[in-house]
Image (cartoon, rainbow, N blue to C red; front, side, top):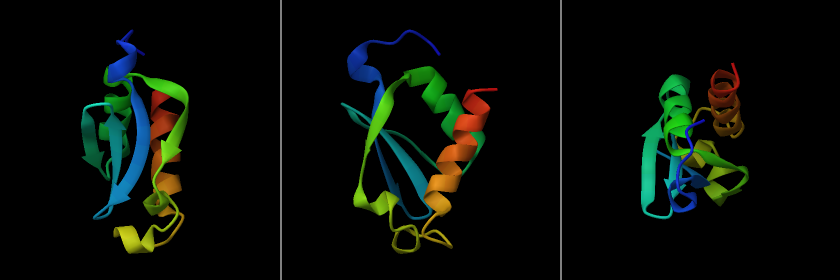
Length: 84
C-alpha cells in the first residue's frame, strides 16, 4: 500500500448500478465491478483498518447486483488481490 495522506484514504463504501463505490473525503474515487480495478484503487489511495458502509452495501439487489451478498463478494475478491 502506498503511503497516502490520511484525507485521501478510502474510508467509505457504497454500491450503485452493480458497482462497488470507494469514497475518500473528496468523494467517489473508484466505481467498478472489476475486482482488479478496485484492488488497484485500494492500493493507490490507501485505506483504513475498517470502513463505514452505506445501507446499499447490504441490499445488493436494490443496488444493481444479482444477489444481496454480491457486494460483499466483490469486496472480498478485491481484497484477495490487495493481499496477494
